[in-house]
Image (cartoon, rainbow, N blue to C red):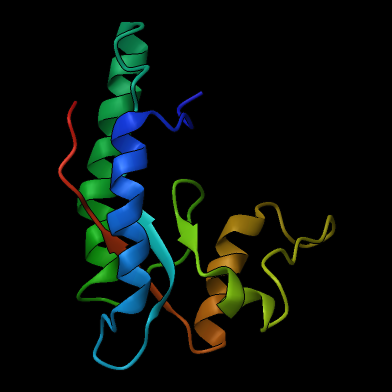
Amino acid sequence: MNQDNYLEEAMKMRNLLQEFLKKHDGIRHPSILGLREHIFTGSVSSLAWFMSNQETSFVTIGQRLLANPLKVRFHYGHPDVFDRIFHLTRGGVSKASKVINLSEDIFAGFNSTLREGNVTHHEYIQKE
């Protein structure tokens, strides 16, 4: 429901794609770039408002801390953006198994990190 690509998100995408050209830890280009999600359904009900605030808190505090200084952030679903060439040349993105994995999202981050990728998180100014 919150995966629309409206004008604000489209304008952000140009700057976001430029982040893949920079070396963020001084050594490697990012292989997965995480960003905060704009939850525009938060005004539907009080429960939706609470859940959107919870998502905002997790992303702005937790994800930022995991990415820098801890450097242990993996992939936690949309709206993360992948470097397609990096992942296709290293075995692909999905490694899901109906026996072992409940969520293939985190395993994309594991595979990226094990193959010397750089998983990071950036925030852009966003209208609420």
